Image 1: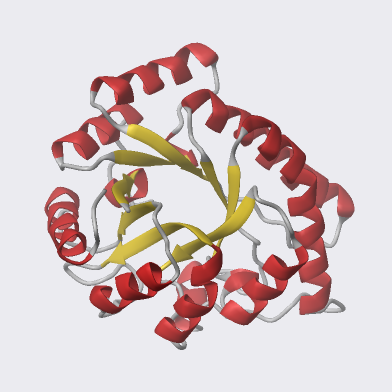
Image 2 (image 1 turned 90 degrees about the vertical axis):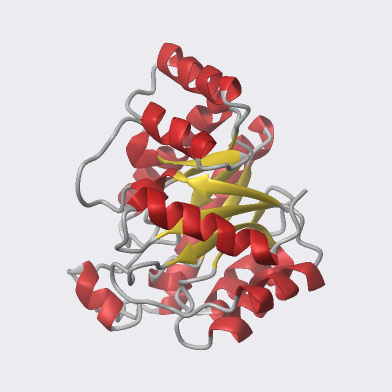
Length: 275
C-alpha cells in the first residue's frame, strides 16, 4: 500500500482557499508519497497550467494518482444525465493530462434533502423523487458509467465509485451497481468514514472491489460527525482482500489543517504496510 493525501484534507469547503500549488507543496512537506486532487482545486483546464502542476508534483517526487469529481447521475431527465456524462468525460481528459490513474465518481443524490447538514443528520439517507424508485436510479447510474468506460479505458484510467451518500449510502446498493458493470476499468473507492450504519461489515462487503481507499480522520472533532475508526481492523480487512493500492487521507477534523494532517499520517502509518 502507498500513503497519499487528498487536497480536500487542507480545505473542507470552509475558510481560506489556497492555490493547488500550495496544497501540493504541503503534501510533500507533510511526508506523503502522492496527492489526490479535488476538482475544486483545479484552477484551469489549459494544458499549460496542467503541465505546470504535473511538473511541480514531479519536483517534489509526488505522484498525482487520482482526481476526485462531483458528478450526479440521479437525474430523471436524460438530457441532464447526458450533461453529467459529458462532465465526467471532460475531466477524464484532465486526469490523463495530469497523469492520474484513478478518477473518483459518485452515484449522485436525489436532492430531496436540500441541506447537507440535514443529510448528515439523517445518516446520508434521503427519499427518492416522487414517482421514481431506487431501481430507476441504479439503472441511470449503471448506464451513465458504461457510457464513460470506453474513454476511461482508452486513457488508461480507472473509474472508482465511492460510497459517498446518496445512492451509495449502503453497501448493498453499491454491490448491485458493481455486479452490473463488468470492466477492468471500474471499481470501488472505499471511504472509511461514509458507512455509518454498520461500518466494518459494509467495508468488508466492498473490499474485494476496492481500487483506492479514502481514509477519514477527525482530530478536533468532525465537521459533521466523528467516527472512532479502528484502523487496525480496517487494514486487516484490506489485507485480507489483497488490496495493494493508494490509501488517500481525507482529514475532516476541526483541528488546524496542517497539525491534523500530520497526526493523521502518524495514525495511518501505525497500521498500514507502506510500500
